[in-house]
Length: 331
Ligand code: NAI
Image (cartoon, rainbow, N blue to C red):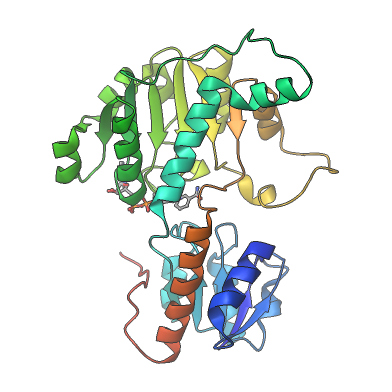
């Protein structure tokens, strides 16, 4: 199949080339998919898209007009896709439901350890000959209460790592996981989680119900001095309220790999540009905020898995096989 491959980065291209073996004709495009670039799909059968490509109803309609039959998401989340519109246009959506959940869980832990023990600051200091320990004090993770929102594939790996540190792990999920309970995770209400956690880590998907799940009210219930980690989707946190919580010191640490307005920023080198987003500029200015630009998934193992599953999804569609990884619209 001829596939318009949007938002291509060098690591995507090298990994897909390694696994494709000329089965599909992959047209690598650096542009993200949006109303200005959608016509690059003319003459193609399929689109391969990533987290910040726009797949709303108007784009999907144009894709249909251009002859696109299937959209292969090379990611797990599908909050950027209008599934109803895709069904109406009879365009199939396939995704990679799981690609190294360990990678994202481990990145969440990296954010915690860096924020806590300030290794990023120590690294810069020592390089400049500053061997002082002033203002580098952290805290023991051992014995602290970690609240995990969403204990699916990523959340459960995260729980196990934090149990390994000797933390008390409490969790909130619509569907508690019995195996995790037997390992020592205690399921509690969202309110209890907010009230008791020293560290809160978000691992649920972004849906209508979870949009701004961490809002003004949620911040008001948290312990003063809490650490908040989000490697899931930016929209889970009301970022303007997070800035207020940092200012009033409810939030003592914030670590995010995702950001509400990330599609205008992430995955690009904007180092010579003026950043027009005042909220992220404010966040960057805090000494106790650590931002990474959606790199939680970025391990060799995850990239291999993303490429092999995406290519298989495309081949299954082309060959009329059952689509194991199809995402359907649920009314
Ligand atoms: P999953 O579907 O295996 O688990 C999600 C869990 O959240 C499920 O157990 C579900 O019951 C729970 N959940 C759903 N609604 C909830 C609610 N209202 N309150 C509490 N829990 C709720 O998903 P997985 O693979 O663990 O991924 C989680 C999220 O991580 C994805 O939706 C995606 O947004 C994000 N992600 C981020 C990546 C990154 O690079 N930073 C890479 C991959 C995924």
